[in-house]
Structures are given as structure tokens and as C-alpha cells.
Image (tube, rainbow, N blue to C red; front, side, top):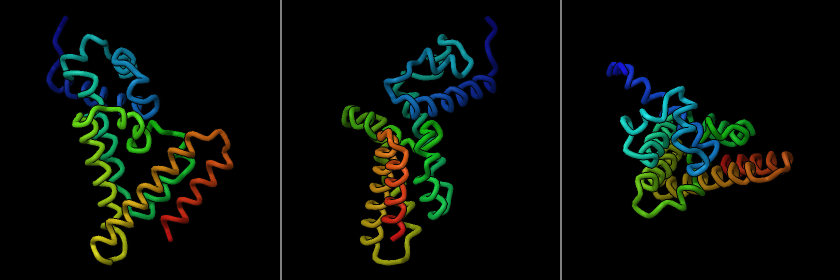
Amino acid sequence: MPRVSQEQARLNRERVVEVASSLFRQRGLNGIGVVDIMAAAGLTHGGFYGQFASKDALAAEAFDAAIRDEYEADLDAFIENYLSIDHVRMPGIGCPVAALANDIAREPPGSALRSRFTHAVKGLAGLIADRLPKTSKERRRQRSIVALSTMVGAVVLARGVDDEALADELLKAARSAVAG
């Protein structure tokens, strides 16, 4: 078998991380296997361990890639997009915090995924705090944590119910609470 160039190996790795990021958010950490991830990326299973030490290592890298997208919008756009029915319906392209909170809660303390999740929660709370009206640092942090908790909770609940009107009501109530 001919070896792939370093550039092609880098592109393959990026593709696997991108695909895994979406699939983990759609199906959960334990709802998809390495074979399926590699097939979805258009690659063979054999190349996986040349790129990643384990599925957990891939999951951690995929989480990092997914969370980067959350940091780019202004606060109003961030809230509006986060608390949208599209975000509820398409977890594969949404926030990994809302998509993977339950899975990561089952990870052992000190795991790479828990560490990244913790960093992401702090980062998102900081992002919100930095964009709130200037009050004391402690007050902005408290408001940002309440806002993030409300937003994530609303999305998780809206994804869990089988009543679209209730899902919409959950999102609207969260938008109202966060904006107020």
C-alpha cells in the first residue's frame, strides 16, 4: 500500500475530527463506533490508530473542534441561535455542551472529556459575562452562569419532549429569561 503524504494525512485527520464531532453530537459518545466514524469520513478503520490513540482521544479533539464554533457570534445572535428550534432539531451542528452533557456526566472524574467540558462551560460563561452590561465582575459571572444554565437546560428539554409546541415554549421562555 502506498503511504499518504503528510498533507493528505493532515486532511484525513481533520475530516475524521469533523465527522466525529457531528456524529458524537447526534448519537452520543457511546452511540457511534470507530468503524462507523471512519466509514462516514470515507476512510478505512485501519487508519484510525495511526492518527488517534483511542476513541476517547478522538472524542476530546472532536469536542474541542465543535466548541470553537460557539465563540464566534455576538451575544444577541448567540442567544437567538442557541435557543432556536433549528439548534434543537440539528444537534450534529449545535453546541456540544447541550448535546453531550449527559454523556460527559458519566465520564470518570479527571477524564480528558470532562476537562474539556469544564473548560468549555467556563469559556461560554465567560463569553456571556464579557458581553453583559458592565456591573461588578461577580454579578456578571453569576448572570452568565444562570443564562448558560437556562439556555443549555432549555435545549436539552426541548430535544427530549415529543411535543413541538412545548419545545417552542421552552425555548421562548428561556429567551425571555435570558434577555430580562
